[in-house]
Image (tube, rainbow, N blue to C red; front, side, top):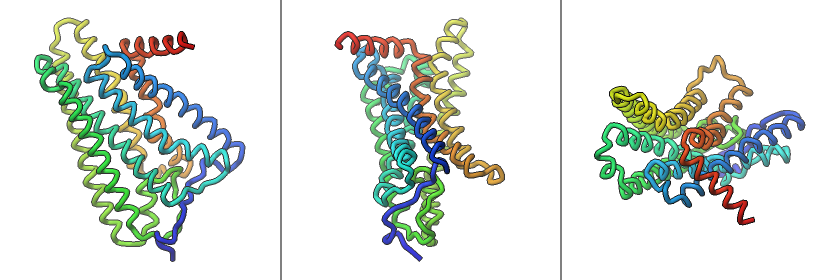
Amino acid sequence: MSNSSSISHFLLLALADTRQLQLLHFCLLLGISLPALLGNGLIISAVACGHHLHTPMFFFLLNLALSDLGSICTTVPKAMHNSLWDTTTISYTGCAAQLFFFMFFMSAEFYLLTIMCYDRYVSICKPLHYGTLVGSRACAHMAAAAWASAFLTALMHMANTFSLPLCHGNALGQFFCEIPQILKLSCSKSYLRELGLIAISACLVFGCFVIIVFSYVQIFKAVLRIPSEQGRHKAFSTCIPHMAVVSLFITTGIFAHLKPPSISSPSLDLLVSVLYSVVPPALNPLIYSLRKQELKAAVWRLITRCFHKH
């Protein structure tokens, strides 16, 4: 029997068994993370430097890029390090920090996507009130509320999870530290307290999901009432990137946590965990930059300016 006080490190799930596959996984993770870091970094720089992009939509997009950047930097570097050096260990404090930051950035992402949906709803359904409902002060307050809520969510879960006594070893069935995997190591009935917190968080997530669905129902109704086809297309084009990002984020998360045990296998579980933790932050910049001409132009100006300086 061991408890959490005697555990100095955890063993993460290896991405592969053979050395060749480990190096292949390292290259794949590098191939995903570098474009993700570059894409999100370019969005942050373009929005921060482009004064014409200082609008609510792009302000929230900057915040979303920050959360994507954070979530990629939380899980991928350690997985790459373990693949390259053929190790699976992570320190106790490192695991706690990874769990906290993963929860923080993932929660922030979902709250920000909900706010961005509200922004699109006001823009299309209540355009005359847009300046008052989504002004610069309101945007700052909403973004601050999203980050503060994510911080409290992550802190609450991390503190509660790591206060549990652990007596089922230190091997985690995941390539990064995640709450369900640590709960499996617990030997105390107090893990029910964490399940209660998870239930509260699930209710909050469901509430955000209801807001997103309600907003899009109202948006579609408003867009279909627009008489000109060009007007309908323009209204839809501002929503398509957000819908794609929300769909990707929600479907990968739901499949990762609610897939039936009958189709579960170690390799599939690993693939799904990479899908929901690494792929959305990597694809989000691509989805947004392909659909938004102003952003694409701003990014291109930023790149050409950098080249001219050198």
